[in-house]
Length: 285
Image 1 (cartoon, one colour):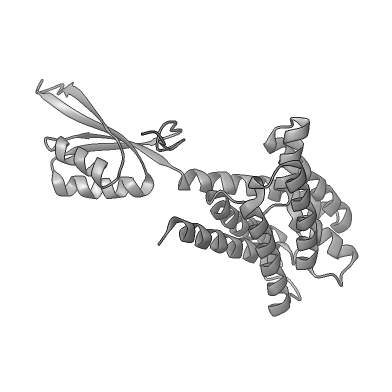
Image 2: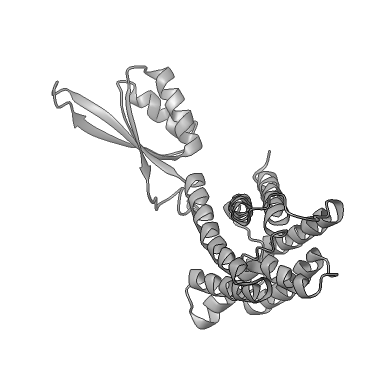
């Protein structure tokens, strides 16, 4: 399976997941937690006959035009696709599964489950370096022309929609929506952290050359050989140091056990990794 196909599948699964959280939990309880979706819910409150997908699609088209004029074409390549598909899925769900009430009556349960499901979907989309448009575009414009930090700009645009939702649906729902913005940010940050987690691994083994070759030839990662000395035996030791992602770490651990069952391996979570192969790719000769 090619990288482009994997990315396409990942984005679409994320869009479907996000739509389920929005349509079945947040929208029936009128939980406008910011974004184009929240704006569409406020509009639908005053004009009930309008389809949510139509509102979302129309507002996204306006924002995409602004993004093209004010930011540039490269920024929203995948954003165009994601925003239109998300609107289409929401409109399709509304047509196929018209909601006449809540799935659960408890507003807090609707908020928590809706935000978690939506957050997982958004994380999958962000992980593929894409976005669903909406307030992301507003935040980018504010950041570019008014030098407002992108996170603060996104919060400002979402907070404005939450205020409008509070006026339309009442202060209780407005406060729930404000809580939703905070939970959404925490869910996304946590899932992205887990997906992008890196491990710093140290291996002490007599078969260090074989393990080093496996790291280079099978995992296509570099490693560092460190000369050390045993504290008790005072014998010379060769230590391999390598940084890997979660999938690569699992493969290496299995390989080390096969190559040298007596090997000593430690793995610690790396908070941040900057360098070739992680923060940028090598393009030289």
